[in-house]
Image (tube, rainbow over all chains, first blue to last red; front, side, top):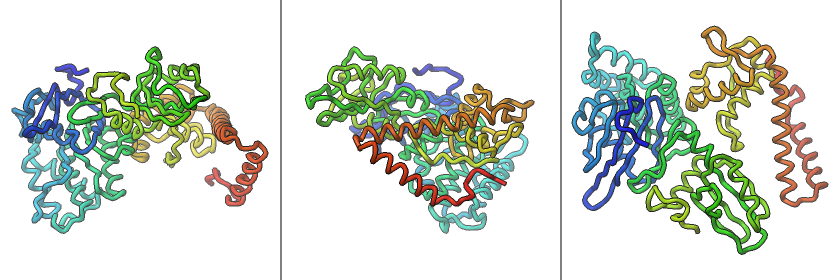
Length: 323
Length: 138
């Protein structure tokens, strides 16, 4: 649930909608990002992830609804939001003709700090590019894609932001650069900072995130601590005695069906349940020969939610399409 | 500093795999009673996992009496941890082998054939490993 003025939330989004002509980008999205979380925003291309992040940064305006970022309204104080939030866009726009160190000096001008001016930013930037092994005198246009991404991350981190927003930070990067990005996120989290990232790398999100949200066609399917999601989602692999078998758990069981796959004498039910023992009841259903209860990976959970393509986030098992 | 490998994924949650690995490190005397376990920060960065995940594993290890806080500097391996971790290690191996046996039996293969495969694989694994074995650091 979203509470409007919870001081422990770095970001709150309330009922935000956004349209591009007749296309719905966001349809009444509400979401809270707790302080200190590493929050992974997952969804297909076109689900509304980038639109959400751009509204939070005040780069575009929502058509309705409201957002708060570090207790600021990005629609009114976009400039201040962008000063206080570190942002790594999917395609970093950097001045090609500057060198790695010049662009740090240039960005420092926008981040003066009380007492010390831009020098604190510059010192941190110099440390960051050193740790990322970036050549300070090389021009941006002569950098590889991975190096550009690291310049963008260094610029975002050099202001020591309380909140870092990354839009598909690791897409198209090689393994080593991805690793460095992930290490930086983990490091920020260890310092109590907040990280919001959108990503298609679900296995990566599973490792570094504390919270996840699934977005589908501009709507929220789910948002919760990753640990809770994983502790309450189960894959039931069931073998039946006959070919003619149930295609969903009976509604009197405390199981919410997310997605189902059927075969003769077999079914896979991806369900949400209080705990593993709540799933055990399936063993006693008529016609059931054997059941294995597994804890699916985040990727399997994600695929299950996306495949079931629920028209609304609200409805339960009844609205699920069984293949 | 110890090195922990999380690559093998058996469906266990990450915090469970971390606490297992710490237990095996203690059982193998890579980490000895009185020595400090890596800090949450250090280990989360090394493994590239959320610090909360490492903290959760450490909470479990503390609850089991294997790690104990030491005057604000971190967590050290508790005095009786070696015995407990050796037991935990055999329990873990027993459970994993038991699961493999159950799976093998579930396929309906003849038990004698399963036993033959087991012996065969054991011989292969023993031949592949050098006689020095693993686990001894010095």
